[in-house]
Image 1 (tube, rainbow, N blue to C red):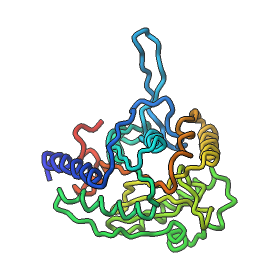
Image 2: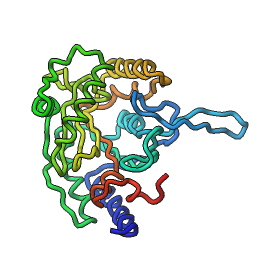
Image 3: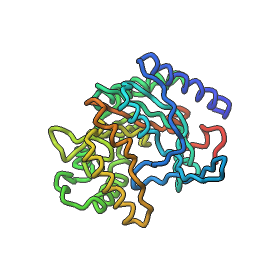
Image 4: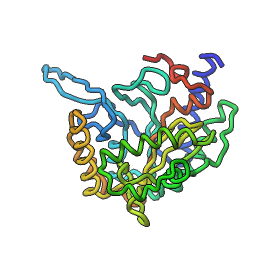
Length: 302
């Protein structure tokens, strides 16, 4: 498949994605790219930018790593089904392969939807996205609990890891996951769900087992495509997680970031349950074009 074919099909896929959401009653939202308050994820590095107004005064911003906080503020204003399709940026990423410093992200959120129903909606979207390519994914996606994968592939019961400090936990977890779990994921779409709370990020705890959160990731042919949450809407718990994340950044010699208080104050106004997901569009196109090089599916790589 040549470059012209790939970029043409990419355009058709973006149109199909938008139509998918319009037909389901979603509204497309445009949110800022330059942010005063970047995301709190301890292992992501937002790109700093300085803007200057007409008087010469300068302002410090970061390019968004995700539209997540802005989208949840909109949910707090009463919007119920929204999506965003546009560029995001991350510093200190490889140039080419499976990463690019600028990439296209699709995020969508729905109130009155739990994370299990969101898994089904992901499958529905994959079917539509594949049509311009004349392809069909093997659906429904295969689904695996994180606890079950660790037990089966590594002989580790994650319930026994609960007292490990968070920073050490993350290191041990990803050492096992990347080396023993991820390589064993089956071909085609696979969903890994219910992450330990130490990796909770912005996901709510499971009601029946608070040591795990309502988080899942989508893989296609072993490549991570998307990250989803049953959304955490408790302000105190989210603030505590942010505090721990920034302590983690500081411990690694990174600059901590201030909290977006408007985001935190929006959380109680969002109805339960609400779910949301971020999907890397370039990686999805890679899968459809059957390439492992992100530079093959974008117009002009960096």
